Amino acid sequence: MFIRIALVTILTMGIFGFGSKAKAIEVGAEAPRVEGLDQDGALFHFADAYAKGVTLVFFYPKADTPGCTAQACSLRDAFESLKAENLQVVGVSRDNADAQKKFQGKYHLPFPLVADSDGKVAEAFGVPGIFGMPITKRQSFLVKDGKVVWKAESAETAKHAVEVQAALDALK
Image 1 (tube, rainbow, N blue to C red):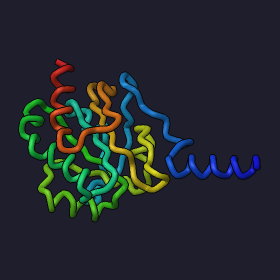
Image 2 (image 1 turned 135 degrees about the vertical axis):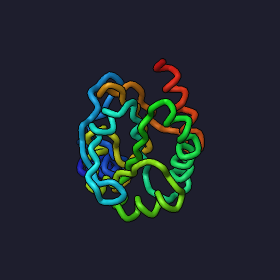
Image 3 (image 1 turned 120 degrees about the horizontal axis):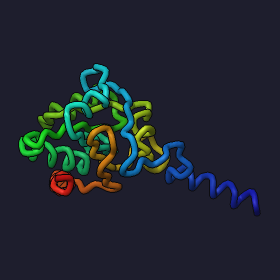
């Protein structure tokens, strides 16, 4: 009986992503200075984005799925007003560079998409996986002066730009 309970517990933890090595990043923490490949296969340095101004790093589960498309298009549609506030926008998912490139092109996304195929960027930010699969939970972070200043544990999809704008307004 004990072995059966232990096996069910371990299986459940694996399925729901519990016990992940990723330690959650909190507001006030140093932002990870990680690197990954962008949609063009070029090395993307997060520290370079941070140096340009406040940076939104948003994680989404899977390119070209309904919720992720709504989230990315929300940011695309508000991109000019967000850019006017000197905001850098970077999307991250476990998709490969080719999938990110297709997603970016199909929806005319004006910001880089990082292909976190190995999950190292998500791990650095403490973003857990979903159901034990190689996809990340939907989370967003605002980075200012190298520190995390805002975090959305479960970002809205179609209203994500509104959430981000409210967070930017609160920083003023």
